[in-house]
Length: 262
Image (cartoon, rainbow, N blue to C red):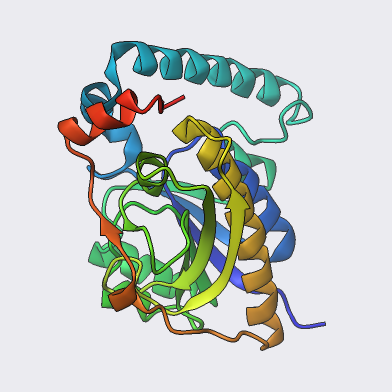
């Protein structure tokens, strides 16, 4: 049996999907640290945009579900993580697994890069880390930096693939684990899997499906890296599609199609 990979996780605040995937990763490798990147482009910091895109009532519904999840988080802590298994926040996934947790605002800050050098990880894995990682950090881990993206690359590179899948009335979605480079969703593909999204009318339901697939694919990638059996393939971005944040008009069209945030 190969030694467990020594891994740093980079992500952003999440209460619903990412903590469960972190918990899975903790069973497959030695997690040295879990890092939340709280920058301008993190989804939690785009409340005004969500109000413009989805309207007051959808955002209020999301807020109600979030408040309920916060209540579950505190009940989970009181139960010693026996109720919800630490899956109600990234911080709680770290606490449950006795892994150091920190919040930063800049992935590329020289002080943070030096901190990672001192940790000397084999690998950094990203679950929706919200910043482009620059070469100084990309070059630190022995096996580089890998990311799970909620789409079937090279298509739907860029921002908010859950929105664009629904906007374009796609029937098949999925996730891709790929090497990170200095360009967005540009590195070689390591693992990829599809899922039926024909029954999805909300981004929340679609993300539950694609992030579940993504978490399993990350475990496969970790196993293959540890075993030396990884077989990357080219991410042919010139043949794919790229999407930015939606405009207000596009969000209006999204809602007119009967699609929702939650």
